[in-house]
Image (cartoon, rainbow, N blue to C red; front, side):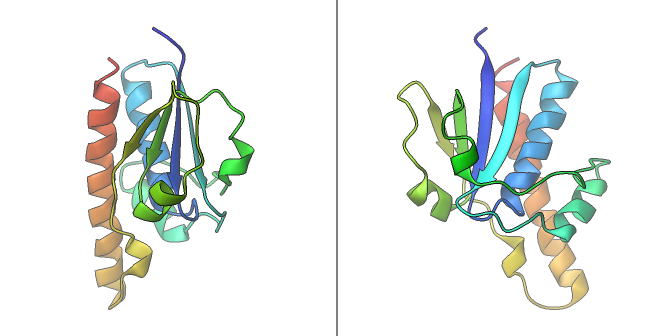
Length: 142
């Protein structure tokens, strides 16, 4: 099997791409899949603390993750680019033809309003959707 490298992209690399990077790593590890897994944003907004808390529900610790921009990885040999929001898909730089691009738009829970409970539920809902997507995505390589 060729070297697998995944780059997950969203607008600010603060929420959805961080979740997807974490779950892709999680499922790759479970299946002993050797892969480089990174995430980036069109901009770098910092890792959202609610994402760190939400992922801890699945015992995933991303407290040491950083928020990065696409520019940091544009010259890397990336086999798969996954955009997790429409803005990132529309503004994603051009990667070589051999790079497989997948797009799946997920709701941005940072836009949720209401009580603290309602906001937390929005983060959990997005986490569940991204987790399922990542599990299915990794399963195609095992």
